[in-house]
Image (tube, rainbow, N blue to C red):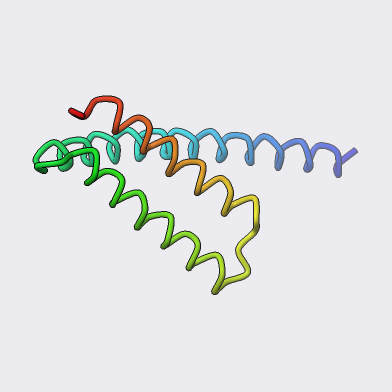
Length: 95
């Protein structure tokens, strides 16, 4: 019974930590998106600036993943996140 109690406590702790990390991730994403939108709006061609920034991010992720033992799931999620940010940023930029 002690093992079950211990496992339950560990699972609860991991759930709490996961929720804290999710909150941190959300805040980071919102701040990053707003910062990048502000920076891109200052450019003569804001859409091209966003494309360039996101392209550099994709290259960095690919480079990191190829030089480490990065989990393919992590790489895919990172690339999906870049696409998500790009879509959000470009949706408010002048064409």
